[in-house]
Image 1 (spheres, rainbow, N blue to C red):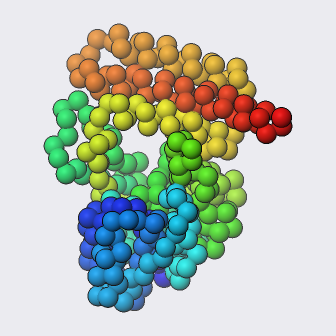
Image 2 (cartoon, rainbow, N blue to C red):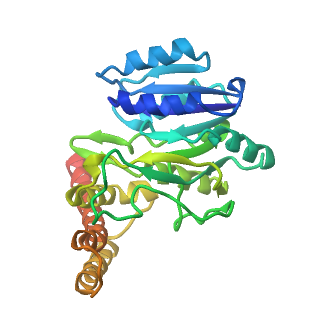
Length: 305
């Protein structure tokens, strides 16, 4: 009924925790399979996989040489036997009733082809006191409901799609979710939801479908958080499937700059690094967006020449 697809690259220890949580599901093992899509790992991922596959008859794996999470995700989906595909990250841990609650929602709402749920954050070290408390978690409340595309999102950390509908919308956009010539292409999960929405599908939020997601230690760094904003901005138009004028980019950049100034000058008791994150993340995002605008035009001009 359900194929769980886990994309992984060189994180065997975290992958092992994720897979153990999938072994310990309350759902009957005849009703789900687990597919690990190895994105050309060079650590002992294959050893870990073989240990699970030998013990668990509903576990399988596939190999994807092309670098990029979405190449691996799509490869896993192509061999999936389930009517539904449930995505979970290799650094996430599923609660024991995760799959049971997925199936329960499917049985009540067979018309829904895409839905997702919340995730709680966990870390392997103590988080710095300045670190944004909301970072690394997702909650849209306790009500089961459609989400408002553009204002709300669910993510690939905890996302379920009907397989035939997934391939009808083209699967994950393989340009996004990859690294090319030093550019990190993010936003693939948002783009997938937009593709579903543009095909007339309503995306649901299901609060009972819950997992835990790791906040990696290297992310507990102000520079990392701001650079990630810039990288997301570099993919703004591709992620949202929009075209924008230079004027639109400049207005957004100016607006982000003014708001950053107001946040910095605001009198509050927010730790300084957290204040800097709240102030400058949107500015870094808009900077990345305008850089991408000029990069694309220079690239097109060079092709034409």
